[in-house]
Structures are given as structure tokens and as C-alpha cells.
Length: 261
Image (tube, rainbow, N blue to C red; front, top):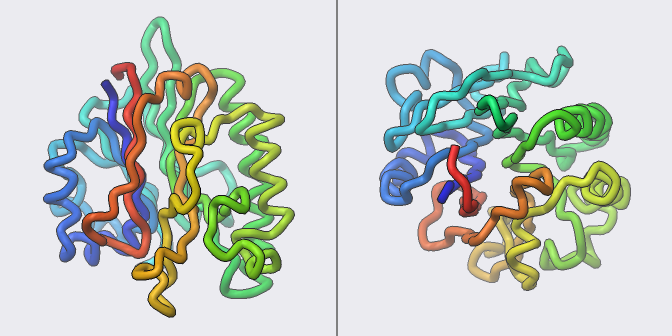
């Protein structure tokens, strides 16, 4: 069994003060993708480069205290790729890919943090630029290897994926263009929204605003995903959104797959 976690930390130092390392230690995960670490190498190395026996590989943002992603693994990857080859977004530290290739299998695990467009038109335009780059990138990757991308996609795909969908149709994260991009990723490129294959139920959220008692009232959004090629998605057997403790404004998304690295 292979246990893979995705968690937007909203700051790795902040999440550490809330006990996320102890939680991971008890989870027996094999790999963990983290996003929005909000730290650079001088903070991570020697303190957060290993967590619960897993070694981390990171893509840092140039700007201090901003963005940044990591992928932790118990097994050493055969290769690590940082960035998608675009200067604008690689400077923001949004993509790290660990490859676990063998003579009989090519497999990538990716931790990715998609831009948010909620702060205004300029960032929404940047988000659309990122989406335009990621679709062909993932299509090309999926054509040559199995993959699981975990991360904060910053899109709620369907009405079931957020509490107040009627009032958010003109807001970033639930715009028709964003949802259409996600549909194309699944329907045309063929990636699988793994969580939804296992859990078709409503009110399954991974992010809650800090405003208006959203957490207490479960007024949330499902923004965090496992997106996988069909060959690996078919091995998913169990999902869990961890809600018992809060390390961030996001909840950890845990999925077990019936295979081994």
C-alpha cells in the first residue's frame, strides 16, 4: 500500500507550531506533497528537509515568505525536476516533480501550487497564463509516464465542490473558464480526479475562509486534489480529508493506492 498526502501548509513554520510534524509521524505516509511553504532554503535545510522519516525536495520562490512547494518521500527518487520551464512561474516556486522510474515503469509524483486569482485582475490573468501552460505540460507528461499531481489547484470544479456555488460564479476559483479548464484536463487529456472516484458525496471540502465562521459552519471549497493518469488512478482504494486538527486554512488530503514505489 502506498499512502500519499497533499497539504497546503500556509507557511511551514506556522504549521509546525500547530503540530503538523507529529501528525505526519503518526500517519505512516510514503510521500507527501506540500504547498505554500513560505520559506527558503536557509529556513528549510536542517529543520524541515526531513519530516517523519521522509526526505524533502523543494522548489523555492525567489520572493521571501511566498509560495514554494515540496515533495517528501521515504524512497529516493531516480530524478527530481523543479519548475515547468517558464521564468514567470518558476520564480514563484510552484512545481516540484520526483520521478521513480524502474526498468518496467515510469512514474512521476508532483507537488504543485496553482496561483490564486482572488486578489484582483492582474493575478487572475496570471492564473490563466499558468493554466494555459500547465495543460500541455501535463498532457505531454501523461503521454510518456504515469503521474500523480497533488496540490492546491485553486479551482472548485463542480457545484458539489463548494458550499455557496450560486454566489461564487463570478469569483476566482469558480469561474466558468477555470472550471472548463479542469473539465478539459479530465475529459480531453484524461487525468482522473482521484478523490471524486472514491467519494461522490457533497460537503467534502479542503479549504475554508478565515472569515465569517466558515470553518465552524463548514462553508468550504474543495481546492486540493490528487490528479492522476488512469493507469495509476485505478489503484486508489481509500481517501480521507483530515479534519481533527487544523495546521492551516487547508485540510490534508490523504489517499491510499494499492501499489508500491
